[in-house]
Amino acid sequence: MTLSLYVDTARWRAHQLSVLAEFPGLVPVAKGNGYGFGNGRLAAEADRLGTGVLAVGTTREAAGLLDGYEGDLLVLTPYRVGEQSPQLSNRVVRTVAHAEAFQSLPVGSRVVVECMTTMRRHGIAHADLPRLAVNGLGFDARAGIEGFALHLPLDRPDDSDPVAEVAGWVRAIAAAGLPTGTVFLSHLSSADLTRLVRQFPATTFRSRIGTRLWLGDVGSLRACATVLDATPVTRGQRYGYRQHKAPSDGHLLVVTGGTAHGVGLEAPKYLHGVLPRAKGLARAGLATVNRTLSPYSWSGRQLWFAEPPHMQVSILFLPADAAKAPVPGDELDLNVRHTTTHFDLVADR
Image (cartoon, rainbow, N blue to C red):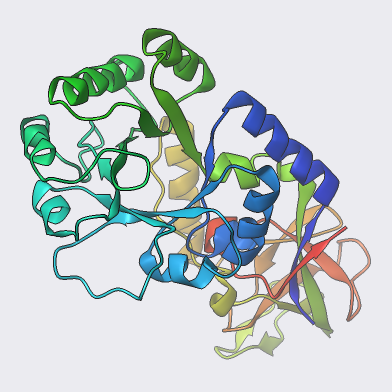
């Protein structure tokens, strides 16, 4: 019995092609848990798209995909001076975010330079660009600087123009005598990309896209959990590790999916506006009395956790006034964050 992700493959791939058409030259991203699909599956999909480059998070992820992906692998985590990393082939392109890291790499290394944008996460500063020009590496397509990368904010509450930010960097790179042939971008709209292409026709802009490419059409994906058991309970009857009382007559459902899968684990959220904050306060208040909605649904009804998720299963409460209780082997719909969920099975349908 498994926690499953079912993929309407034809629809999913049609969505990928629509994103590729909107962002010509895009670089797919496969990292972490592979957005729920696994990095191996995404590498195969990237091969089908024919982009020639796949971005990954770490050197270990790159090493794990060298045998299964034919193109170049761009490691997004910046190189750190003195780091220990697995043996990598010349198909792996490293990111550098500091002049010292750039200068410490062996001559002939393939490099993309990350620039310090208003994200202020990491990247080389404007003032350090001239230090790259005297390193001695060639600027051709096979060695040295193969491009610059700009990781941009998702939101701009100050109404600043992302195109102006990118344009400023392209001009600064050119003024330092560095190649502006390729610039990798993250979080830029297709309309803004079109504006950039008009301003800099000699520069190839390649958008690095993960979430929108793989998870942008939620209707093509269905997450499901298998019912392992359904036990009738009466109001006040005790159950579970902590022997809570059943709030009413109903059923306890034991279903696949627990903390090992990422079920019940939630990343912090940045809340905008009054309503989301009010909902957050309401959820926190219910949690103090051991009432927590689960991501599981049966017959269109979202169910409550009967107790906190176990490692590989969860126990849910289904009230007696609900639809007919499921039986072992039935599947419940599951609304989870794919980037934090580890499915037992990813199956085409």
